[in-house]
Image (cartoon, rainbow, N blue to C red; front, side, top):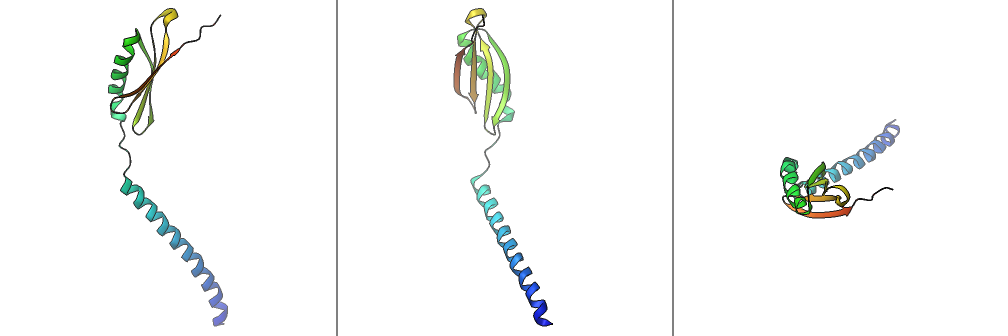
Length: 111
């Protein structure tokens, strides 16, 4: 009788041992991520991103902002157009705590 109970008990102990190892591994992973620190979000800077990117784009003509999007925790992308008529171009402006990238592209005309 004692031997019949020992086998299921041993199997349960081995299964729980795997769970304990998994829990310990998860805790270590969380501690490492916590020590690295999460990047600080800059969502509150979207109005500043819009303003800074508008200023950068205005060097190329009249500015029309199309969209402002949070690309990652610390990166905002502003899309828009500059110029008018046949000289109009699109732009993409990257912003962290300042403008970190600005690209102009020609807009293809149809016809």
